[in-house]
Length: 189
Image (tube, rainbow, N blue to C red; front, side):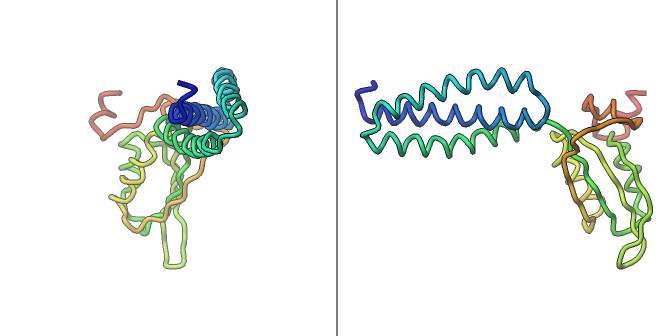
């Protein structure tokens, strides 16, 4: 199969997609502090890398192999990012400023299991309700939908916290106990 040009291109393409996907995941895991899992993945990453690179270097006179390597690299970045999106590792802190302090925002979000710290604020157009919410990344989009359904005019800013410590709801959030409503909260009690 290595003598077949199309077969060689396919192998190089697939090998590089796998390599860069591993590379992307390793980098993300490293940034998230998952050092042992990142080290485990890097072992396979380097094996795949050596295999792919050796195939290209042994056949460097064929430009299609170099192009397949480059295209595989680009596709690997996309595949790695898609895998990371599906894994949704870590947490997101969402800061919300509601257009009205009278909306029962905090109560609704707490009933759904989110940890919410809120305070009254004053904006350019008057009184506001400001909130800080911590959520596992896998629930981030669901949180945005909930916020927009409560207050379509809400101002939302999100970022990834580097470290989480303290707070009465941290244990619940770390366990991923986000609820769909009040009934599930009552069941937990």
